[in-house]
Amino acid sequence: MKTAALYGGSFDPPHIGHEAVVKALIDLDFLDEIILMPTYLNPFKAASCAPAKLRLGWLENIFSNYKKVRVSSFEVDMNKKVPTLKSVQHLLKNYEKIYLVIGADNLKSLQEWYKYEELNKLVTFIVASRENIDIPKEFIKINIDIDISSSELRKKIDISKLAKQNSQEIATYYTETMKEKNAR
Ligand SMILES: Nc1ncnc2c1ncn2[C@@H]1O[C@H](COP(=O)(O)OP(=O)(O)OP(=O)(O)O)[C@@H](O)[C@H]1O
Ligand SMILES: O=C(O)c1ccc[n+]([C@@H]2O[C@H](COP(=O)([O-])O)[C@@H](O)[C@H]2O)c1
Image (cartoon, rainbow, N blue to C red; front, side):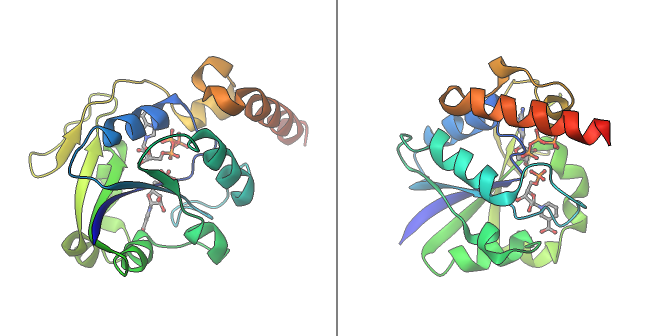
């Protein structure tokens, strides 16, 4: 059986920071596969901006030509908030080891994740550096230096920060959706 990195996220929108994380993961020889798994909805969030199926389609498009990478619709298909533990348990039916990828900003809330102790026993974490946040030594670290976030992009879309494949479509979607939201 193979090893896989589970890289979950809202990807609302996907951006070049996410692409940089995936590229860094591809270079890790101990990973057979990288599984991108967009959330239906982050368990800690009240809503997403773009619907789950749209975010899933964007990711499939962006990463279709990346070797070792696949996009999983597991959480989107559940049509509800899915704790990461459930996704890991699902993957462990087919993979012998799961590495769980998070950005360093997620470290502060990790202990509050659903059944964190159990999750921590099942996975090995890979943490992507972000905003100079300290990453404790027990984590595998990947060095990412892309100062961009989806929330910033939702406030002000910048096409140069989006993946090239579908940047125009994504930029138009957020420009129009945010205009409508602000007009309400
Ligand atoms: N620029 C980045 N550098 C390193 N890690 C990142 C970066 N952007 C996102 N990540 C990590 O990738 C995962 C998915 O990110 P997510 O879809 O939440 O994007 P985000 O930019 O963090 O969004 P938001 O601003 O809404 O929190 C998270 O674990 C996040 O910490
Ligand atoms: O399992 C949990 O309790 C949990 C709580 C908060 C976030 N997560 C996961 O963390 C990943 C990153 O979320 P986000 O919204 O920051 O991209 C995504 O896969 C979420 O499902 C998981």
